[in-house]
Amino acid sequence: MAEPMSQFCFRMAAIAGFAALFGLSACGPGLAPQGISDPFEKENRSTHALNLALDKNVIRPIALGATKIVPKPVVQGVSNFAGNLDLPGEVVNDVLQLRLGKAAHNTLRFAINTTVGIGGLFDPATPLGAPEKPTDFGETLAVWGVGEGEYLELPLYGPSTRRDALGKVVDIGLDPVRLLIPKNKAWIDTFAQVFAKIGDRGRYSETYDSILYDSADSYAQARLLYLEHRRHDLGQVTTDSEFEDPYAQQQ
Image 1 (cartoon, rainbow, N blue to C red):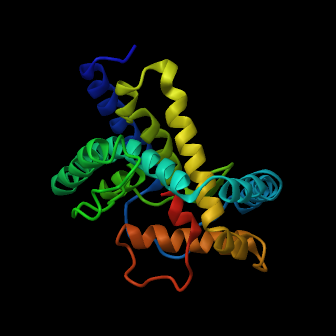
Image 2 (cartoon, helix red, strand yellow):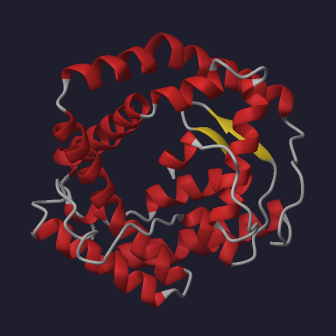
Image 3 (cartoon, rainbow, N blue to C red):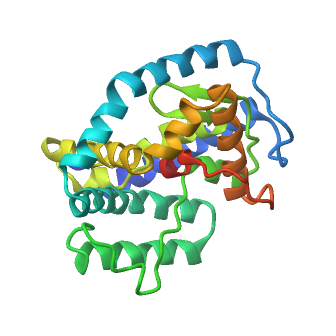
């Protein structure tokens, strides 16, 4: 049974406040980051090796097989659907960031794609002037002044930072879609998100492969690309990376 809205709002405020306090104490002031802080490199490289093995033996073969078997419109439709399910959580983060114009934009995008786009399977909002403007709780923490923290590589998720790893956890707790989807239908969201990630891995296979398998040091390359892309998205650097970052698809 879905929880009442009042309980959700209380839970949202409690989680957000706790996360902010934890992030501030753990990560320090929210200044523009300089260089790379990777004191856990040994552990991160072990996780990277695990992720690489999972990609090589499981994820990549499934992704390449799926993109060959499943029609492209279906792959795109599921990806659109998964992205649409993310929008309510993004609106929550927009509000927490006091970016009310962006919150209105993402609310409009959700309304258009949910109705005209048949539940989000299609994306009529983009040609109608409401393109994707993603955000997350990691960005919310950055807006609140929480520092980037140490670089981390997470199992399955890949490159991250202490702040962004915390943000991923909080985003799950702040997701308003949980109010709308009955518990016995929660697998729909999970399936859509997983399938969308597999679809991205298949569609951007050449870029992923060039970094993971053609680089002299795939760990260092992935770390650099993630940090460059993330800092650029947060407005902490002004120059674009010369590389195409496949991890941008996971934001």
